[in-house]
Length: 366
Image (cartoon, rainbow, N blue to C red):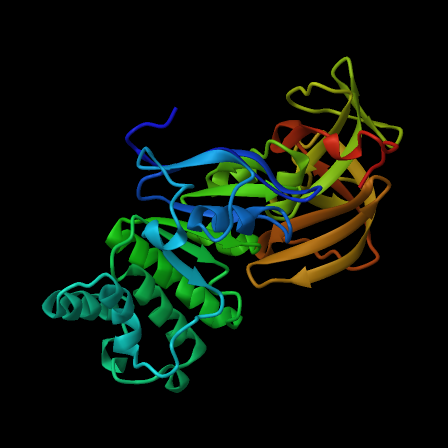
């Protein structure tokens, strides 16, 4: 049950289009003042959820409560929520100031109040000196900041953002991510953000809701999702990982005719071991430099090696699939493409998961 710290509660939220289900029984409590990101692939239900909250579409089932009051019966303009899209939707014939001030005029605020609030919003996004310019005179990043100021100028209880940085180049996008974090800290408002970019989600969010096929697979902090994924989908979608699929019987995990040591337990016999690249170790074929605790060891051949500055990334082909290994550059061995090596890991450095993705398929190693 939601408490005073909950600003928005979604209960059994469902959206169907004919026979197709876009969203299925989503339950979610959004905490007051948090930066919550909806993350998932295209078609996973994240934008549908945002549009339901905004009031742009109607739910087939379920309810939404904003500060304890029913939300779904209100029209979009009655919900008083801020919305920022990927495409800025600025009025081309209006100046920056006029664009930002527009929602205040719609709310019939007095001129002195409008001037004060508009000035504050433009300073917040660091565009005060651009007040008399028109959108066509601004860069893409500047236009997006105008859209952000317009959405925040009336201090909505929640700001909804749908892929707002998706149309920008990488460097500008990374800079604006830091700007969004700064603005969120300064305002203390509640932000709900939609993206398919996992790195963006990790940078921005207090919590992340991972969507898949119309459901939320897991909600947690970036650390929780990366270090302790609850499903194989989350483990694969957040960051890189080596995944070995097999069967578990009497505490023994078997894959590809080999037996591996694992930590933890799962409900079914079909399982998967997920290991992050930094938890894998690489050595020569004799294994002379592997730590003792890396009791699981698989031979393989280096198929690719990428220099990443502070570290190297190795793709090693083994009998159980491709292992992805990241090694700090100062610790990297003089291994080359084509070399035979040994890859090892400790059981406690891997995550054992139910393999629901292959319940109807033959067990295989990936």
